[in-house]
Every structure is written in C-alpha cells, then in structure tokens.
Length: 249
Image (cartoon, rainbow, N blue to C red; front, side, top):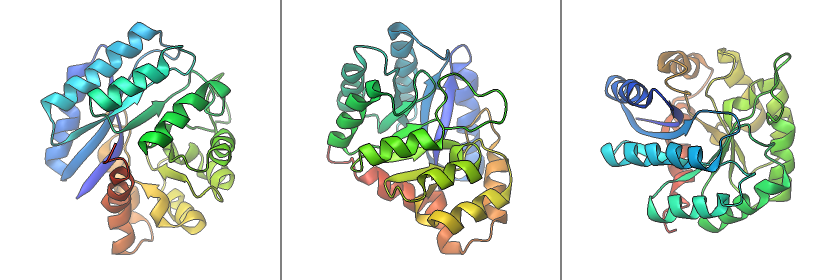
C-alpha cells in the first residue's frame, strides 16, 4: 500500500489533473493522496479561496482516497481564519506553504502556532537551486530556522530540499522535520544518502503528481538500498503515524 503525501491540482486544468491522479491510484495501489491546489506565486485571497474550494470538492468526490492540504499565503490578514475553516469545517489534514514567503518569515508564525494546536503537519516547498532560485523560495536553512523556533511543530520539507546534500545537512538534527521524496533530482542515491543521515522513519513518499510521474518516484524507492520494513515505512507507515496525530482535532 502507498500513501502519496504530495500531489497537486492546478487552476485551469483541475479535472485533467484529477483524472491523472485517480488513474494512478487504480494502477499502482495508492490508497490515499494528499493534494493541494496551486496557481500563481503570490495569490490573493480570492484565489486562495478558489484553490482550497477545488481541493475540498475533490475530497468530496473521492472521500476514501483524497485528502487535502489547506494552501495559504502568509501575507494575508485572513490566513489563520482560512486555516481554521478548512481544518474544522472541511476536514483538511495539513497546511501547504509554497513561495509567497520564506517559511521562517514572522508572518508564518501564527499559522504554525495554530497547526501545533491542531497537531497537523505543515508541508513546506523547499528547493535549493544553483540557478533560477525564486525570490522567496524556501531552502533547508529556512526550514531548520522554523523547526528550531517551533520544536512542537511537525514540518515536512518537500522535495528533500530540492538538493538532498544541501537540504538534509540543514535539518538533520531537527527531529520535528520530515522530508518527502517528491520532485527532486531523480536519483536513487538521494534516497540512500537521506536514509544514512536521518533514517527511514523521517521520510515520506511523495510524487508531485501530475507534474512528476509516479513511476519515476516509485522507482527511486524500489532501487534504493532499503530493507522491506524501511520501504513499507516510507510508502505507508510513516505517513499513517504522522497523520494520526491530528485525528482528535
């Protein structure tokens, strides 16, 4: 069984992306996919509302399979209210932060504090690039800053930080930071290195579907130097334990 902790639907192609995700679930024994909706880099409040509405609609259409992240722009005055509504009224399971601010910006702190109360994870896009780094694109260093400030928070550093040799070094000693395997450089060596540094129990399977293909991400785990217990933990067990924390919210 597989839980995919990182997938997307995008504005303008919602149905196309939903269809791809659901087809992958049938083909590859994916029992749950956690989805956020994205569009512009600095969305306004109306766009955030529309994107989260689409995720909620997908959750209603496929309640057994689709879970949702509440996507937020921390610069908005209403971001905590949006978070409360999506968690309490719509049953979403976590928060998604992308590139509107660095994740250790002080405007993120009220979001993190509310997530701690709910005991839900915060999925943070993090990507270290040699060229093309976006203006407010979080890296592993920003994730580590946030994790040290809020050791009670559960943070998922997406994409293994984009470059595992940069991202893992930053968060290695932050026990409240998990990583997901989605959308980084597609090498099995990244998985081997990450396990050697933080163990298999802080790694979550993610694909970045539909933008990244399921089988490429799956192949990295299958080819990595892992025991069957470690593979099961990455594919399913770690996510299940993590998400059960918030079941009593």
